[in-house]
Length: 224
Ligand SMILES: *Cc1c(COP(=O)(O)O)cnc(C)c1O
Image 1: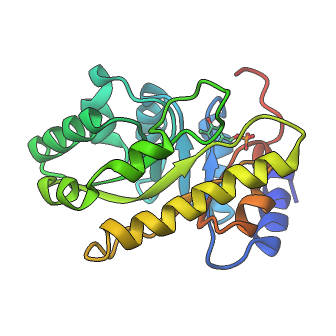
Image 2: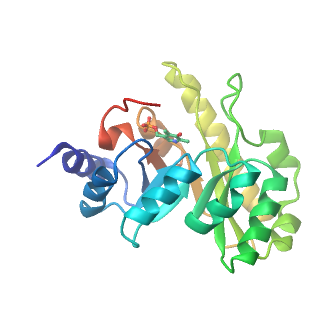
Image 3: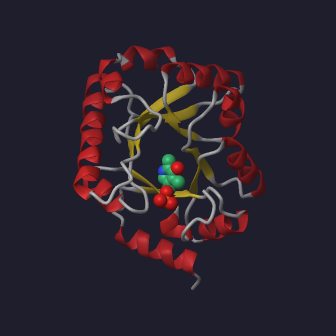
């Protein structure tokens, strides 16, 4: 067995059945993605729209593509055309732009709200306060072609696993509170995307429903 298949096997054995895998394929070749696909993974994540679109065109239709990197407004059209889920929605304005574009393309697109949980790192995302202070019920009602399906977050890059755990725990609490406060009539608000190769066990422990793992499946990345 080659290493990609072996890695997937080991992960699937350990991962609880209710947690799904987004295989992060940025910088990987279509051949590597195809190997992972043939080994049973059907959801892949890219952080750049152009790379996502190119791989989508080169690979089987059965793959669901998640955009996990910051989306610039001039790329919304291409993102809506190629991604099935945009995990990295970081502003209300972007949400509106995705909705209008999806309406134009006659598509329904699933989105996650990215939350900035690694406080001293400058990652994009809503602040916890912004999520708490927004009336998502009326936001969601005003969207015709976007479904807000949950939250996504990236923990600090640190060896301090207690810090990572506390960030995941805050996001998990925010997810449950927001679902209860605003999405009780939107049955699709079910996804909490958190956990990467180095911290997925902690994320799952804290309630993740979706992990985004690249290195764990494909090995170390050479480029960024
Ligand atoms: C690259 C990336 C990942 C995966 O990172 P690994 O450490 O290789 O598992 C997950 N989420 C996002 C947003 C990423 O950019």
